[in-house]
Every structure is written in C-alpha cells, then in structure tokens.
Image (cartoon, rainbow, N blue to C red; front, side, top):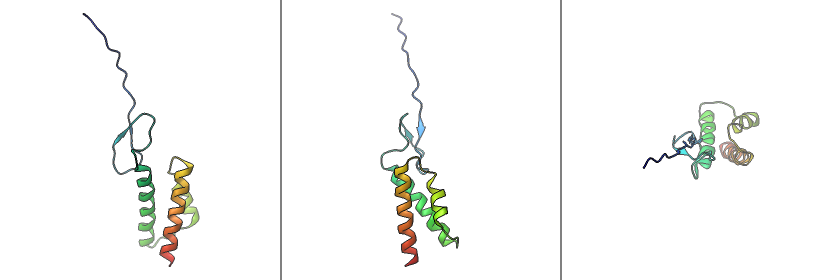
Length: 90
C-alpha cells in the first residue's frame, strides 16, 4: 500500500519577549506571560539608562513603547514607566 501524507510545515515564530527565544504558534506573538516579561525588560532598560545618568522624558517612553505590538501593552508599559519614574523622583 502506497500512502502519501501531505504534511505542511506550520510557520514557527519566536517569542517576541526578547529573552527566551522559545517558539510560539503561527498566530501567537508571545509565550504565555511573556508579554508582561517584555514590558518588564523595557522598564528595566529605562532604569539602567537612568542609572547611567541619562534623562528619561515622556518622548523617550513613547518611543520605547512603539516596540510593543499592541496598544494594550504600550499602555501597560507607559503606566509602568511612569510609576518607575515617580519612584526614582521620590
């Protein structure tokens, strides 16, 4: 019996968090929970910039937020960055 299987390769994406490099499904952008990890990584980058003596402005935060794929994540990042700046100022 000669059987042919039609196998199609599902496109594989890499998690967009920037830290894990794990594969995600064809419709996914992140592994579960890694969207929050991406926000945390960006906030930590801002903290490191402040520690290095750079001034962080709202324009810097907005520009950094553009790295995120959704409006909801951009909002989450902006709120977290503003909280971090308020703590640094206190």
